[in-house]
Length: 177
Image 1 (cartoon, helix red, strand yellow):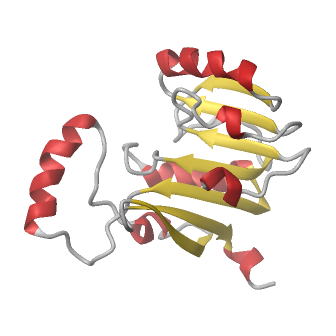
Image 2: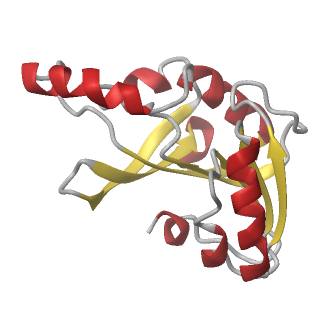
């Protein structure tokens, strides 16, 4: 669903931050230039195996989402799938996304975020255990976007009711058109 929402076309330059094992790679259309970033070399070894099942041009790089070794203004599409809820500094990641994207870039987020002002007691308690697995179910996307040029264009439920969503972000200068 997130890949479909990117509306990828031949020639697009796609950045996938937190590509993990590369599960999305076989879903990509041909002639899309893809750079997949992950902090884990082990994950990227798994992703590399999936590059043979795509006709997209894929390059995989071990890198930190908060310090991308990429050129400024290089991408017109970004996929952030299940990454903003796990990385230590999501604002730093979004600052890097701002730097490496073109102003009219389409950014699609697939993740789980807190929708209320404060988590319930049960959700806070569950998060203590869930954080042991590396994710935080009490992060708010709106808080992450403070200070960034991105605005939410759309939010669509993706799984488990509204627990997971596909969210489109755009640079605020592009939403006024």
